[in-house]
Image: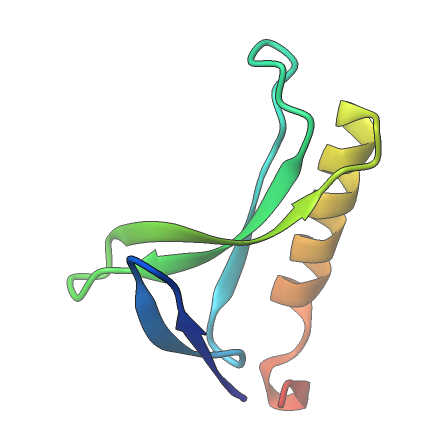
Length: 85
């Protein structure tokens, strides 16, 4: 399934069959409360590009927020490509 992102400083089209999600954990040292889920982009040469944040997970507890974000990302990335829309 093709999705379009149209933000103020970035826009593009992503195919949910091939895109990869990453989890950016909240850090207690920086007093962050939300873990983030981002789309990992790649440059033309195959190196990693931008991380485009699409969701924030806030459960009131840093460890729980990080665990849920990591589990969502794991399930999305491990889901068989042929079953994705």
